[in-house]
Length: 170
Ligand code: OFO
Image (cartoon, rainbow, N blue to C red):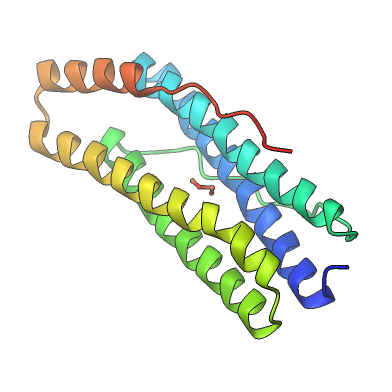
């Protein structure tokens, strides 16, 4: 049976992943109505990916004889100054999530929950990959600045980067 402290820390993370999904959905909508179809497709898919992150945690808690719990979540920001501003906010958010995963790992460590520590390894690797991915995107956007043709190519690139969603592991 999962320990109460670990369970409530994971439930907090479920909330954060659910919020991430809604944040990227709001960003995808902004891109779609502001002439960035590629970025929009990429972010819609990323919103789905965050839902997968949430669901993995939900199943994990339940499989350990605990109870995954949903919480109230705040409405995400949906106004951005530019594509650069939007992806800077993505990067800030991913850094915040990396911190949250590290803190969750710390709770599992203190509770000597080695199974959860092992399970969280996937999230640690995933955060590293996501931060690298968003850094690459941000660097490209910064490089083109206000150049319209450059922006068009970045949007095309993002269209190609929209990846297939990994299935939820049981
Ligand atoms: Fe973007 O990795 Fe989950 O939140």
